[in-house]
Length: 322
Image 1 (cartoon, rainbow, N blue to C red):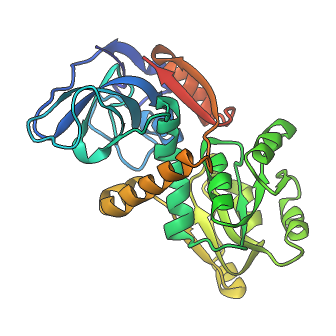
Image 2: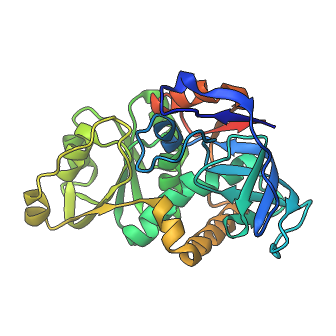
C-alpha cells in the first residue's frame, strides 16, 4: 500500500510517498480502509524531530483516520468488517490502510462524515479536554481563544459557547476574524495592542480562561490580562517561540497556568477520554458543534499541506484523501 514515510528526522520536503507494509489484523488490531486522514500541527513537528517524542525510524506519521473496517484481529469484539469507524493513534495514519488498537477505535453514527470525524478527534478533543477537565470552564465566564481561526481555535470557540461562556476570538487578519465570528465568537479582535483590546473587551475585569496554542508575545499579553482566579491554558507554540513566564504574575494576579497535553491524557485517562468523545459526538448530532473543513488534498501532497499548517496559513481542518 501507499503511505507517507519519514525515513529520517528532516525537513518536510524529505517525506516520501512510497510503498509501506500492510497492517495486519492480529490480536486486538482493527484494520481500516481510510477515507479521510486528519492533518495536525504536531504531525509536522514529529517528522522534523521537534516533538516531545521521537519514534523509531522509519515511520508513517498521522494520528487520525476514518473509514471502513476491512479486517479485525481475533480478540476484537466491538467492531466488525463493514463498520464505519474513526481511529486515534500516535502514528501510522498517513496511509491507505491503517491499523489501530480496538480501544482507540470508535463507531461513527449515520450522518457523521469521515472528514468531520477526524476533526472531532484531535482538534475538538484537545479543546474539549482543555476547557472541561483542565480549565473547568463555567457558564458566564469569559473565554479568550488565540489562534481563533485554526482547527483547535474554532473548536474552542464552539465548545466554549456550548458550555455557556462569553467568547473572545483573537485572529491575525480580517478574513480569519470573520471565520472566528462565524464560529460563534461574541467578540473578535486582532493581535495588535492585544492587552488593551482584552481590557476593553472585558471592561477591565480580565479573562477567566485563556486558550493559547500560539505562545510568544501573545502569551505575554494574555498573562497580563487574566482575571483573579483565571486559568491560562498552554496548548502549544504555533508562533515558534516558547515564552518565559514571570511567575510573579501568577502570584499577584491570582491565576493559574495550566498545561494541556491531550495525547498523554488519552493514554492516562482512557475512560474519561471516551466520555469526552461521546459528549462531543452527541453535541455534533444535536447540531451544537460543526467542524470547519477548509479543504481536502491527495495523500501524496502531505508535505505541502503540513507546510501550510506549520506556517499558520490554514483555517479550519485540513484532510488528506488516499
